[in-house]
Amino acid sequence: MDRDNLPSVPADRNDRLKENVSGPFYVDSTCIDCDVCRDLAPENFRRSFKHAYSYVSKQPENERERAACEEALACCPVEAIGEDG
Image (cartoon, rainbow, N blue to C red; front, top):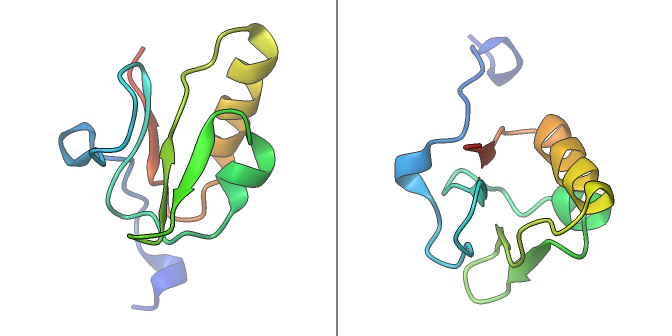
């Protein structure tokens, strides 16, 4: 079975990256550092150059930021972004 036909697996709240700030949005260790979240929600996601992945650097503070984070979650190619709340 090729990767495109694998069932989707949502982000794992128990596998959150340590750099994520506390709150509902998070990135887990399946992140592939593709830039999608940083492009869509640059105020909320940052890159760890040391580890080559993205993490939530700031939880959304308004509706615009929340919408951007939700779009990043929906567009993440490996479903590494989660939201608990």
